[in-house]
Length: 266
Image 1 (cartoon, rainbow, N blue to C red):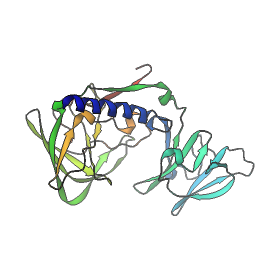
Image 2: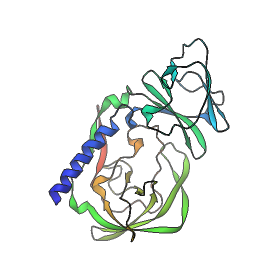
Image 3: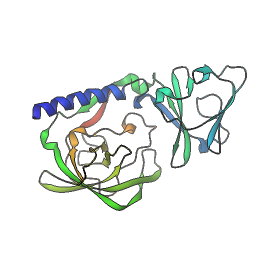
Image 4: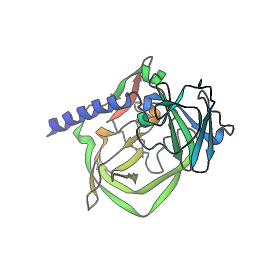
C-alpha cells in the first residue's frame, strides 16, 4: 500500500511541476494592477485605458491600432465593457501578443493581472523541491464546521490586511500531539488550510497551503502533509496570498510536501 501511495504522490508531484510551469501558470504572472490605484486608467506597461464603470471595466484603445491589444483574438480599437474573466488565463478576452490581461475582483476591488509566458521567473524555474513521500505524514482527521461561517482579518503577501473566510476546525493527531487547523471549505467541498510550522522560513517557504479531501458525512477526511503545496506567491510576488490565521502556526516540524522553489541562481 505504501508503494502505491508513494507512486501516486510521485505522479502528483510531477503534475504539479507541469502545472505551475505551464505557459499561463503562476510563474507567468508579472503584475497585479488595482484600478483604484490608477484613476487615470493608465496601467504600468499595459496600453489602452482601463476605467471601472459600475459592474464592468471599460477598455479604450485608439483607432490607429498601434497598441497591439486584441479582444477575443481580434485586433482591438475603440471601446468595450469587460466583465470578470471566469475561465482559465489562456482564455482571457484581452491579449497583448502572447500576454493575457485578466480582469478580476478581490473583496470588491477590481484589478487586471498581466500573464507573460516569457516572464523572467518562468524562464528561471528549475522545479519544486519536495520531501519524498513519508506515510507518517498522512493521518486521519475530523472536520467540525463552525455554527456560523466567519471572517478573520489576516495579513497578505502584498502587505495589505484582508478577510479570510473560515468554515470550521480540522483536528488530527501527528507525532503524538493533538493538532488543529482552522480551515475554509472550497466550492468543490475540499478543505483549505493556510499553515506554517517550525520549518517555515528555514527549509520551507514561510507558509504553505493544504487541501484535504471533502469530509464524509461524519466529518472524516485525511490530513496528508505530503501534499502540502507552495502558495501562488512563492512563484510570483504579484499574488496576494493570505498568511496563516491565528492558531495555524504549528509548533512542530512538517518536513513533508513542497518546500521551496528551485530557480537559476538560487
